[in-house]
Image (cartoon, rainbow, N blue to C red):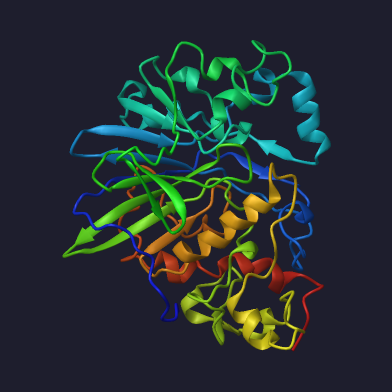
Length: 374
């Protein structure tokens, strides 16, 4: 478990939000591991089939409903220009679409009219979904620099085929500026943080690197006698858990629950079997570094790989806390563990999701023929 270390300072609050994780059935596969981590761990040479999670957030005091991301729109291959679609396939990315989020909401008695705002972590097609299924009263919130970089989309701007204009037409797009003079703005874990509801229940974090204006979120899920739990909604702040795990706060243990799709509580693996895969294992302090620093560095077609690495480094401060559950948009290792909408995710700690899921992503290392044997 996590070691004692300087704790992350998050302002206290008695207010929380209800968080629901939506898996709409979309699956992405085929990306090269070298686009996600450096070095590539055994078993990750080609990316497996992963989801694109969406989060429904309900703020009871104001009865507002938000969506964080929208996954892949069902008609993405016809909504985007042919050159973009060809480019996606040329990357080797295979896209299996699921249901549009608005459809899933209606199936569970939530009207699209009930959604006050959609927060987009960034502009990529596997996150922006189809906002046209929501009324014009539904606002879109984006990160710094987003409007200038990506609006208007295609075909209103023929040169901007990375996103489509129908996502934004006829509705208000709010861009967070993170101005130091704004009373809603602070800093949490060295990320700029915007207090969305003004009661510390939901923070929108500026996590740049992957794209211009990339956002993550920190949702307070419980609060009891000054003690809170949170879910970190990562978006694409990273593309692999290898670039922020392990860490000094949550080191690789001597005994790792076996990440092989069996019940973790019943099977274990020696931590050394994983630590010898670490990029720093052969260094003078390798035995310590391989347990307390991430396996790999950030790489790939990032907008700014330096900013991406810095965001990943800052993420370790959140991920190392026992009261914060980190969920990246494409973390397929959690699919068999999480409970999805219409079930609520707030009691994640009581259900032991962090302990059971923290090392589950290492499963491909165990099954790879390239994995070293002790």
